[in-house]
Amino acid sequence: MKTFYLYLLPMLVLNSSLIHAQLNEATFNEIESKVVEWRHHIHQNPELSNREFKTAEYVATHLKSLGIEVQTGVAHTGVVGILKGKKAGKVVALRADMDALPVAERNDLPYKSEVTAIFNGQETGVMHACGHDTHVAILMGVAEVLAKNRNFPGTVKFIFQPAEEGPPPGEDGGAKLMVKEGVLENPKVDAIFGLHINSGTHVGKITYKPGGMMAASQRFVINVKGKQAHGSTPWQSVDPIVASAQIINGLQTIISRESQLTKEGAVISVGSIHSGIRFNIIPESLEMIGTIRTLDRNMKELIRTRMNEMVPAIAKAYRAEATLEIQDGADITFNNEALTKKMIPTLERVAGDDKVYEIDAITGAEDFSYFQNEVPGLYFFLGGTPLNMEESEAPSHHTPSFFVDDASMLLGVKALSNLAVDFLKFK
Image (cartoon, rainbow, N blue to C red):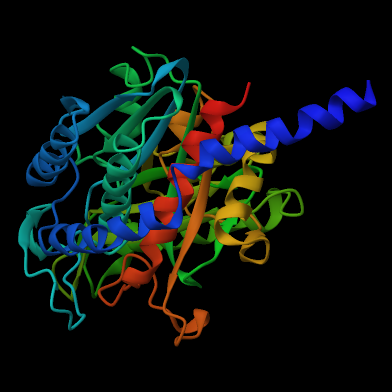
């Protein structure tokens, strides 16, 4: 029996090497300049959530040129490509998000965005301030690599998703709507992979975490109603600003005194307050908007319950009234532990053992989670900081100075391509 296995081992190694031979360095090097060109075009032409019309057309035209079956108009502007291998097998999905942010770019790049748009009734610059332009270009590159090297079993489904940053008020969108519209069906997806460029990690590195890696996000709106009065006679008022200050202080005690932070992190942040119009008038009402981030489902429910109890009670203590509305954003980005364990060797082979790191969970959020709620998924970060810059000095995501190096993208193409092929060959 031992002799038989010794005889069989070289055959297994040979078969494995044949599968990877199609994805050699030359294959990827040929595509790098194209990926950079696509990224620059997308960066110069950013579009807000659910408005990615030109980006979708750009992607669809590319996929069709490769002979890939293309579906458009998925979840408003989403594009899905279906590529079949040489024989039947499993189905793997690869996802990239397409939307930009209402941020005016401050960088001095030859491909800097000069685009403006109306967002929430205000004119604003539009910028790929979170790197979704790199995600789209990378997945376009993966599509070309795999379309030209179809010697794999099964099917690859390319998902170009709109509205990851959240659809406009009053609209549906993003991964949740794509799932609702059946993007993981016909053919039914067995696993999904995705990546996110990271401005705070050096080019060449890949980071990940099994299990809960990114937080669930919720948006909350609190409306406080008081009684208006002249600023010189506050005793005639019910001051919604004072009541709201106490509500904010109370919300922080839910985190600092009621959440088991040794288990998982949690955050409640108020990001916007609107009230009043003049310096000497105590206003009648106030609106505050904020976010909740949780990495544990039980903690998420505790925080929701306590906010619903606390907000109206504190307002009442100050003779005001308050209502609270909490809306779900992304769910917990949860990397299937068995899938992660199986696929990390692929990332280590592609990037190098010393360039793939396990990290702690973060309180950022990603609606890739809605795909993972349906099928096993692995989501990871791709380093984007230039090597001549300290990681700690890299501009943050969602800021006007956000920047990632073009040199980061080739590794992204290699990682997603090899993850797809390796998954499809596993029994």
